[in-house]
Image (cartoon, rainbow, N blue to C red; front, top):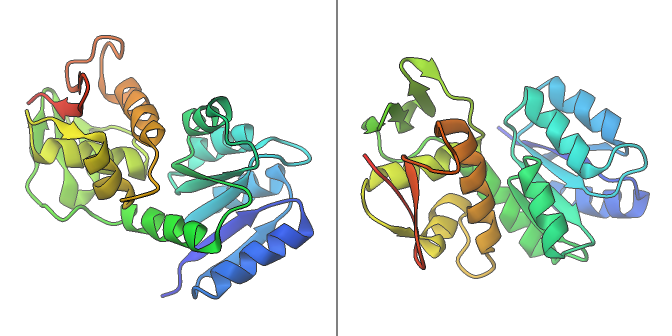
Length: 225
């Protein structure tokens, strides 16, 4: 069954080129030109990936992403002409799963969409894992605390699952980029660090002093069982 990708871009030429690129990869592509339309379409569900331009005529991409996150865990790839650290981190903090900079190489956008779709699947290890007061259930795509579900995005869930698979062991950022994002050569460590911060906000009682998801200085991260 074809996957549905929403392209959010106000420039008609760029929107059409991006849509043609994704359609050639056999995705069903929908297009909108404004942030408000993107939020409304995401709220209706049925999307597999959103490709979201940062600069839009009404709402900027940061606000669009925040609003989408209120109703949906659909993967969001932010597209920005500004690749400086502030804009990239701000987009990820707003809830984007990944980013690509304009002008992008078509193969790079395609690879990032494919990686986002893989993150939407279940993890390949089925046994539940306890992480402190959390239960991580990879096969069900679920994390609970005392039986209550913890609301994680798909990327946050995969990140926690990968760490929980090897409790107590330090996992490098490079390993996480490969296993969670599927990148081996154009991955960005900021993807890992920002998503770890977002994950801690949801699973730690004190995100500034984490007990579950710990930093291993100079290496990466680990979960403490």
